[in-house]
Image: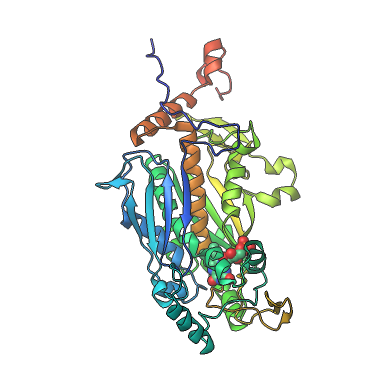
Length: 445
Ligand SMILES: Cc1cc2nc3c(=O)[nH]c(=O)nc-3n(C[C@H](O)[C@H](O)[C@H](O)COP(=O)(O)O)c2cc1C
């Protein structure tokens, strides 16, 4: 006789019907401005007992800073996340985790970004800097086409676009990547690995047949690209953009291996994992489209060549698909194949050869929009942010399904579930209708 199955103590989130966010899952909230003293993030819902160190978090933060086409800011910052809460003696406590990523550049912006109200003397000092033509101190009013400047300033009633751009800036994504590192540590313990690469820049795409670089070599290359020939052409496109005072976009691809079948659900729109992942990737400031697997290309082909033929369950209990055009999700549920998500990155909107625009205060056209030190192309960095958003979403989905106040409990729940789905579904077993390959149905012999 089998021992009675223990239920997970925390099998998933309570889903209140009043629109409040579900409780008991992984959540995070960032704070901080681009040139302010620090970025911060609180990560809540991580089970107790997870090994975590700031050295580990530094790896992805450094990856986010790299990439051919990035601007001078990256040579100033050397991002590290200080862990200031939720961890003791190298292991999580189950309490909220507080991380700080300091902005080194703040020392060049202390008066402009001062948190305290300006004294009369400090206000005079700032006014004198403006009179001297100090660009940092001068209020920004020539709004940049393609940036958050105009809509943000009007929405919040700001006469200085600095109040918008400081937060709309993707510097905030350093805090997301720090939080993503926590999710990576959890997912790794649960057998899930996530990485990304640059798939396209300025219309130059990798050729899958030539994308032969091993993962670590691709990751260390200038554009984090697995196809060396395509990468050389991509670099040439970035150089062209730079020479013309222009910017250029592209596509990154995030891949997750080791996910169990059954994360997410088809029963409600807001429980579909594809929807949650699309929102997470789309939330990255600069991403303008999201695809899974074959993506939009599916619309151009017949169903017979699109849908992933299901070969059956192998001896280890793994379900095999002949292809993975769906990108690892069907019905909003993981299907056991690798998750493949792509994000479309638009060209950066701050151009060295600034576009014509208008002045926020006068409403009159101006010859050139505001320019401030900027990146030219950020596809590899956006890919690392994409990984973070995917990992945070997947960690949340794992905790929704497997719960657990401690890592051991989460791991046990996952292991029991994996065991259960390695055989016929439970209701078929109960009804006595389960057939096995040995009984002659579904097998070759
Ligand atoms: C890693 C990364 C770096 C970025 N660097 C810049 C930059 O240097 N200059 C800029 O204008 N936009 C940059 N962006 C994009 C802007 O933050 C973004 O375009 C802006 O917030 C408006 O949001 P939207 O593009 O989603 O409409 C960057 C985005 C990412 C993900």
